[in-house]
Length: 326
Image (tube, rainbow, N blue to C red; front, side):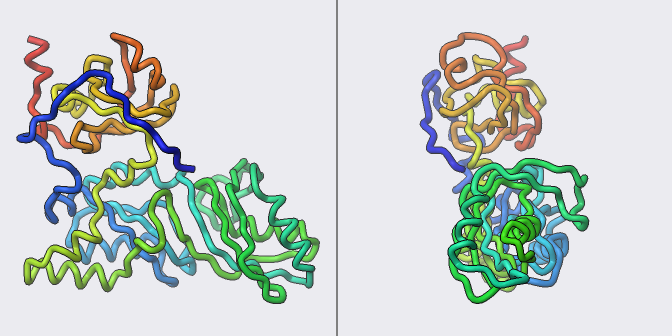
């Protein structure tokens, strides 16, 4: 679940307005290269097909989705565009929320259904279903909440918040088994994926209309509402904010050391995944933390983070590090 984080100043530093750009100030063209669209996936097509349609609508060369939904499942499907596909992998393991219908194979009292539902909150064990494209190994997942919304005969409508990689189809089967009558998932809708919510998701027709209005009439308001900056994919990660002078070195694959740090967020643990950002809030890289927040604030030297994936193209900020090395 999301934590509230504070931003601590390691060393006062200013950012040059002539280099880079705050994510919220990007043009439509820039967002098409470094953005994400939150699609309300319809029932029928695969997640891959929906992603292909987004790519086609926006006339892009590359797009990728975060967290596969089965063809008959609807709801929140983040689709990253072009360069932002480098960050979409973060969505697979992030927390999700679903609304599902469990159809029981026999009659059970409402009281017992609610009792069994409560027993599934916390750590549970699951084996992925046969149709899943992953190795069928028993694994532990966390259920954050499981709320019964309505019971109509043998149909149980419930809302569940869970760790990424939880199979609701398996959860329904296991609940039916524990109730002693058996059961299966009848319907499923994803209502949240990380920080992306159902009410923010858009249908493909609206995306197409907004794109046409922009292309033909120069009307930006609608398309800008739908194109979210790539940094929204990093919002759940604690971040280290770096000086302008360190940006291009990171873009060339260098690890982040203490002299490059300007600010740091609370909540960074050793070996956890973190975001490296500019002082304008631009995503530079995804990294593994080598130090905790406290260590970063207290130490004067050493490697802060091991860079795992560079997000920002080279040359957005000048290569000041080369001058330092000469």
